[in-house]
Length: 116
Image (cartoon, rainbow, N blue to C red; front, side, top):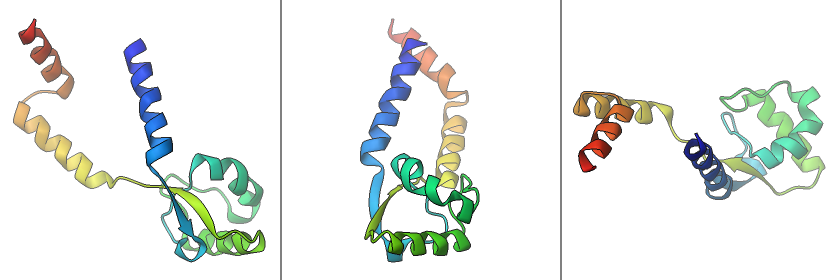
């Protein structure tokens, strides 16, 4: 359990450093997901105008509202998270499961037991 907690913290730290990019106001478009820092500061101020932002990112109307507010605050850019496409990741995990003919955790368990 401690190992899983440490792994989770490590992955969250990596994502907070490597998976963030800054985009210009003109590049704000549908589907963008903002960084936690931006969610805590900027987006909390304008949530009453944009409405709730779902896990799939912002919609077109929200993008236009956010552009207006960024221009009013005289900001040139905003932090966003890089996203990983879900479909290729799901497809590769299915293929991997077919190749090893078992769940990944059972495969790792068998692999570790064979080395001991």
